[in-house]
Figure 1 (cartoon, rainbow, N blue to C red):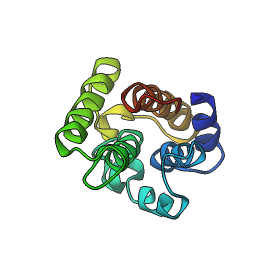
Figure 2: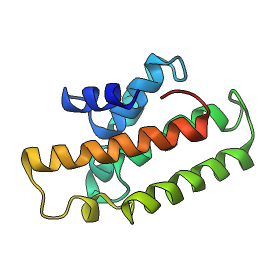
Figure 3: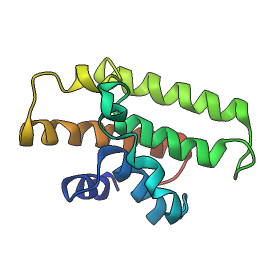
Figure 4: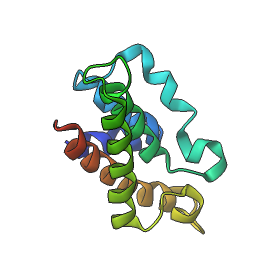
Amino acid sequence: MKEDVIKYYMNGYSCSESIVKYAIDKGLFPQELLPCATSFSAGMSSGCVCGAVAGAQIVLGYIYGRDNKFSNEVCARQKAKELVEKFKERNKVTCCKVLTAKLEGMQRKEHCCKMVSDSAEILEELAGVKV
């Protein structure tokens, strides 16, 4: 459930790590790859792509990417595109700087809960599993 993803986020995991951590708990992603999500936090520490979107992309790549569970590069890229489109339908943009402009501290953290939740819901739909 997305509530678990938000719980991870509110308890110390970054936006990208929260998505990947929950995918690990659901058996979709190996534990040893969690550190891969860290550098995608806060728009890759530059404010670019939202870390929650990046975390969901990591999971989709693992599931549908080359030599993985449902190996099909075309499918992986299509799922990646759909993720971005669906996120933009809800939030207009995927840029962390734009999504969090003028927000600081707890206000930003609470706002980002929506981004984490939205990414988890979209991932659930695209991966065909409860995330």
